[in-house]
Length: 100
Image (cartoon, rainbow, N blue to C red; front, side, top):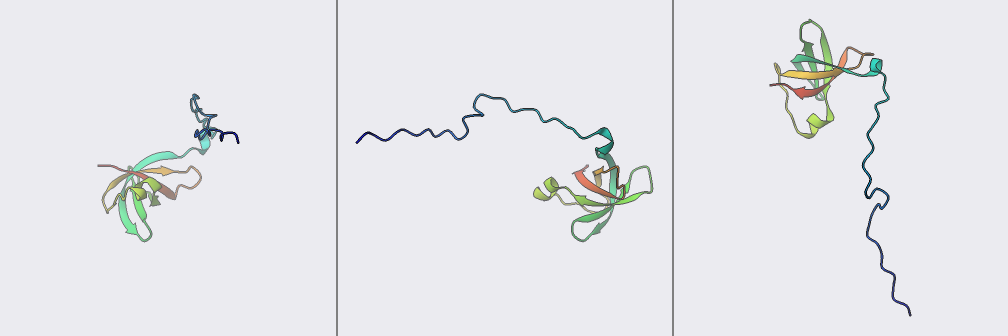
């Protein structure tokens, strides 16, 4: 009886020695979100917040981004935050950073 063949323990031999490809951002400039800053005016249920934007009297409904939830970053009234807003709906936003 011949001896058993040796098995290779490489998981993905195709990617060995290759550099990862750069991601190409195909979204047009008009569809990209824009960043604004503001301060938290009210804390609502379900990690939602009313945020008053800087320089205007405009308030938006904002929720916390996933990374902030993952890191358990707490927000209280008066905190300054950085928001991302869609150009299509300026009444809602996502909180992406808590400013000092």
